Image: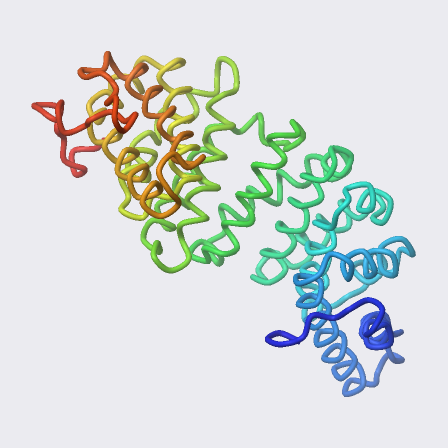
Length: 361
């Protein structure tokens, strides 16, 4: 299943039914330890098989959504499952929550499932699989509909902060990435329960970004992007937003100057900088010292994208716009746009402002 077969909902209907029934089997009587363990192993294996089939096929997602979601079976399983199978069940939930069309998700998954996911996160706070897939599933639900965000409520914010502060999971980039993804989704919905602790959220997010930067080239790049997106959402809040992010402006600069800078990180980082400059004079003064480096970093990425995806690609055009924003907010640009490339010729104005990364505050 993992490597070769994409299941068809018509041709493999019996196999799909068997996998779903294996996931939903009634637990054996208490006291039969060996039987309980065997049942958990079977449920975990069935969950893993369903996960891979759902990842490869939207029709399969819809089929599973109807059987497990609409009937309430998945919700009930999450309420009674042990830690061994909980992570797999949450991974299946995350997959079916991304099914299309969106109406099928809203119809197939009762809003109460958001609260059940929060309960799972609280029940197994140190388990990496539960935390990773729990936040991933909750984030996907929140992206699908604000009603899930409202049901998760402040409990989701409490779980997010607990994981970001966790010593046990501090260096688990995969877990922290999903926690940041969920935080970003909740912030977008205005239901995170995090608004009162913006400075703490910004500080913990910056710590995760620093860990992620040390892991880049392996697993860290996407985590860095979600961290910068969270900082962007915090910084854009009226009045107190920029003040909350200003103490970690050095991490924003470090992420923007990373040799592994991605398109998503460049966009989110540039947006964060624009909000900081608009709302904090202290942040503006600190960022202006790195203007040339920041513009150059984004410009180099534009050149790389144009090389890989073709001159004038959408991502390159988008980042070229952000280069203009950075030049505007951090000082008057010293050179016009190049008529041939439509790019800021950075090398023409790299002068005394060139600052080494080690000088960041």
